[in-house]
Amino acid sequence: STLDRSSAASDVYKRQTLPDVGKRLHRTSSAAVWAVWTAAHVLLVYFTVVRHWTVGDVHYYLQGVDGTSVGAMDEYPDAAVWPLRLLRLAVPDDKDVFTAAFVFSCLALSAVFTAVLLRRGAWHSALFWSLFVGLSGPVFVTRLDLVPGLLVGCAAGLLFTHPRVASAVLACATATKLWPGMLAAGLVGGARNRGTWQRLVTFFVSLSLIHISEPTRPY
Image (cartoon, rainbow, N blue to C red):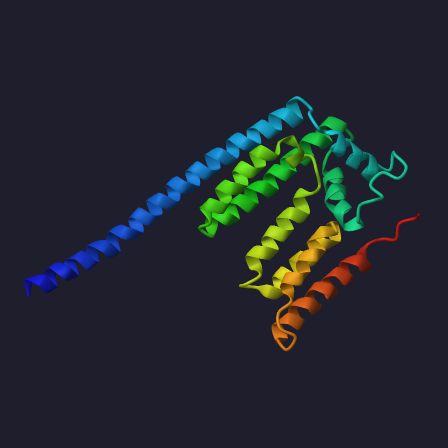
C-alpha cells in the first residue's frame, strides 16, 4: 500500500540521514573540544616556558635526578622518578631545556588522554578535562601529579570492560603516588565473586613486581 511504501521510504531516509547527522555532530563537538584544549594549553606553555612561572618544582625534580641536591626527591617512590630519568636521558644538560621538555611531555600526555576520551564518544568528559586544565593553571604542567591522575583515569575507563588490566594500571598509579591505592576498594565486590579475587590478586601482584624492580635507595 501507499502507506507502507511511505513508511519504508521514511525508514530508509532515517537510516541514511541520522548517521550523517551523528558524524557531523561528533566532528563539531571534537573540533570545539580541541579548540578549548589548545587555548588552555597555549596559556600554560606561555606562563611556564616563556614567563617561567611556578617552575620551581621542575628544577627540584632535575636536582633529584642529577643528584646535585642531597635528599632531593627522596620523598617520592622510585617508580615516580622513572619518567624523569627517561626525560633526562633525552635532553641536554640545561635547566630551561629540561623544564620545556617536562612541560611539553605533560601536554603530550594530556593530548593522548583527550583523544582517547573523544574516540570513546565522551566529548563532555573531554571538554570538562580541557576546562579543568585551563583552570588548574601552570601547576598542571609542572608537577608529577599528572601521571598518577591520568593512570587513575585510565583505570576507571577500563574497569568495566577490562577489570584485570584496570587493576594493573591502578597498581602502577599507586606505585607513583600513595593516594590511588585507596581507590583499590573499588575493586572489591562480593567475597564469593571470583572477579573480586582476580582484580585484587592482579593489583597486589602488579604492585609487588613494581616494588621488586625498584633499586634500593641508600638512607
